[in-house]
Length: 223
Image 1 (cartoon, rainbow, N blue to C red):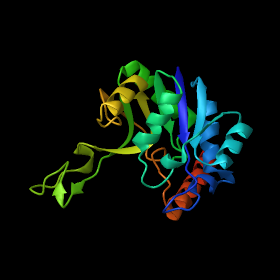
Image 2: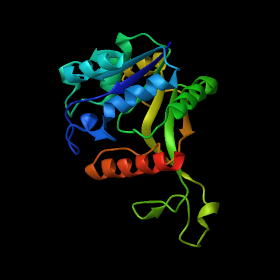
Image 3: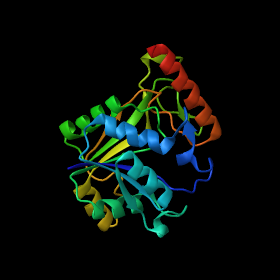
Image 4: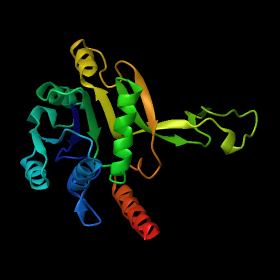
């Protein structure tokens, strides 16, 4: 059983009501639902939220609605908590979290990600963007040295986790959570590269404006 879960809190700190903000005239949450449907790979698709407004959208789009407990919808609740509550409520072999704030991830990319997890026989699959440029942490080089200048194309890429889409083997997740360990990275972890456009995450007004510009450019390019 392959389940898609689209998390959608009504509250958000940096971009108010972000899941209901529109991209090309369509709410971000609706973009996510329609992409999951178009991928034609999930047994069931669920919107996971504490607010009934998202339940109405889910029903209108023909998918399921999971009403999250209110205590798992505030700013102190972690993703580990609400994912555990969801996966305990809905039996599945694999759970795929598809974020509405990654609206440029395509149905085909979703399908390839799901197949990569199943074929890769892993417990966790993370979506990443390969950044093949000099990167540092606290002014300390990660993939280069200050001792010499290296051409960017020769650098080892830094793998930036985007959370556009993430996959978990539910049994491994549940076991780790219930034993008090970090469930997000429990078991055998693999990564799956996606392109920079698919990895664009909307957290601010600027991010939304950039997504709108990129979507228009994509439509012009495709004719």
